[in-house]
Length: 110
Image (cartoon, rainbow, N blue to C red; front, side, top):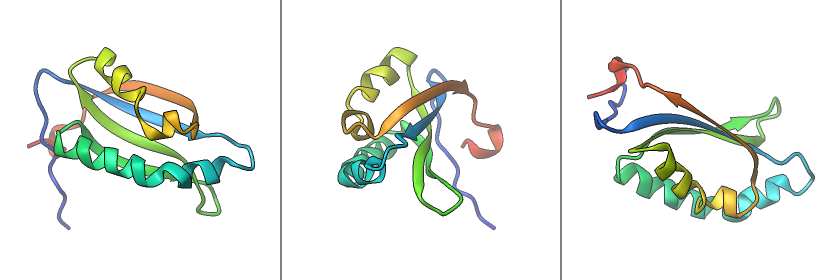
């Protein structure tokens, strides 16, 4: 099995973001309405070395109900600045956001 190594900058901080969608009947529709924008932003973050890993969070039926991102920014303030422009924030998809500082293990860093 092969795994892709993550490039990391020594000075930057790493964060795990857990974004949970609303639980109302329109939550999935809001997600799908801005998903292409969200993915395009994610692609740019990957190209810029700021998004290390991401995945959708699924419920027991396989429906997307949230997101998990591992991000790298010079500071929490810069992460917060980016978050204000994230389509799942501006599109009212994520109704709860938890952010934790993390450190990606050396096995995954090149």
